Amino acid sequence: MWYNVFGEIMRLRNVRGANERIEASQYMILDYKKMKGNYKQLFNNNNPIHIEIGMGKGMFILNKAKANPDINFIGIEKFDSVIVRAIEKIEHEDLPNLRLIRMDATEIADIFDHEIDTIYLNFSDPWPKARHEHRRLSSQRFLQRYDTIFKDKKKIIMKTDNRHLFEFSVKEFTRYGYQIDDLCLNIYDEKVADNIPTEYELKFASRGFPIYSIAVSKR
Image (tube, rainbow, N blue to C red; front, side, top):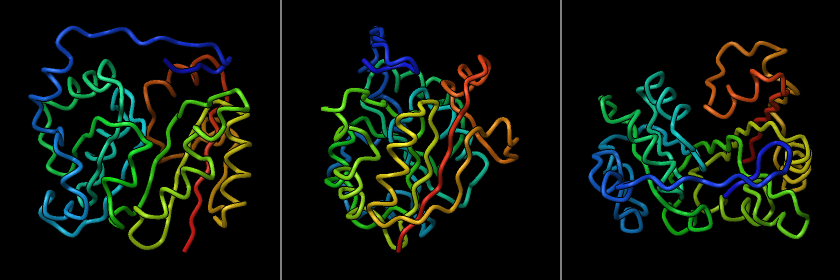
């Protein structure tokens, strides 16, 4: 389950045969725990590696990979019923710079070793209850985990429709020593030219909800 913009619980529908379709996909990294420290060999190049944590149905990561062939992309998603929809989009493409991993974000430090250049956090679960704030992907607990996976300069780019999560994230990033490189209170009002949307983003932007974004970095 996850929460929508109103803090209401949304439930995922099971997709018949999802596990089999996921394991059969050429884009899936099934033995990801064995790949730690070896992602250059997986992609067979020294290009930067960008990851999206919580990629949903894959629109963003797919279009990022198509637009940037000199960057390697890894989409991470824990729900079978969602990642199988991403596979349906990607299967007919020829994208050697794109791979997917089915896992929980809490494992992130166990599968990368100073290999990642940029992290995308798009429309992450806001976990609206205060007692759950440590589960937010922009919390101090997760920022500490990210320290071990970044290659050199740390860069996080985040988008959300949830104002509370956005304000929380700005505070967490700056408390942890990140500098704000870009901040936008509604990317559609400001007409950001190079924005690549997610499915969720298009849905809520069409209803007039502001889409917040922030890019931060740290050396």
